[in-house]
Image 1 (cartoon, rainbow, N blue to C red):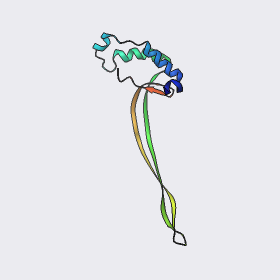
Image 2 (tube, rainbow, N blue to C red):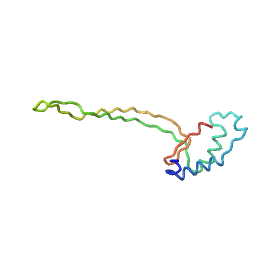
Image 3 (cartoon, one colour):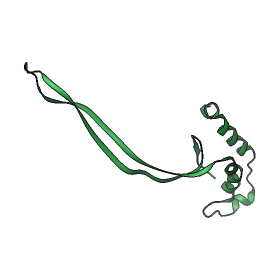
Length: 112
């Protein structure tokens, strides 16, 4: 498993949190509103370890590059020059929330 090798500390914390997490019948039956009791219980385990809800925002920069004929030499052979077009899409990703982020590891509890 890649996560277990690449991010051993974060992986161990997730496994420990899952092992210490249990779901009761009451949790399943109770309406959650913004957040049910299940993610609240999971958060109680992970938040003290430095796992935070994080909002991601990002712009997208795309560079298109090609070579285009810009003329011909004295023998009539085509001469090519570099061309570049830059496209920027601001707020490409805006306001997506991820429930748990620590270092370079992120996961959502949307399945709760």
